[in-house]
Image (tube, rainbow, N blue to C red; front, top):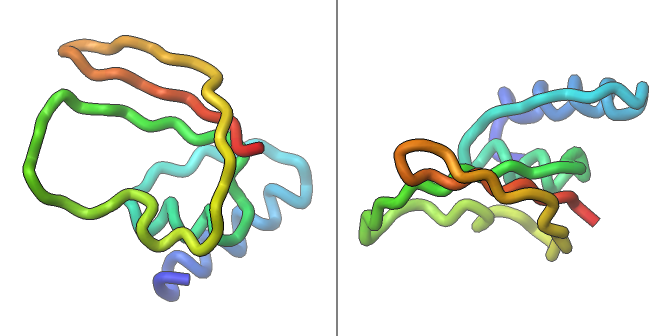
Length: 89
């Protein structure tokens, strides 16, 4: 777990997950890794921007285990972005 704030959010998401309620969470690499490590991700949407930075933070660097993903949808967006939707399997 990355920090106290992530831990609180994961606890709340766990409650929604246990109640079989959908929850939409938006965050960066550390937050997404925390949710994946707690088993709270059933769908993952990534927006790819057509920019090469040359450096940056790895999105799944802090994920502890391998997670299989199934591609559900590819949606072109403007200007040149692409949204990829995956199911966690």
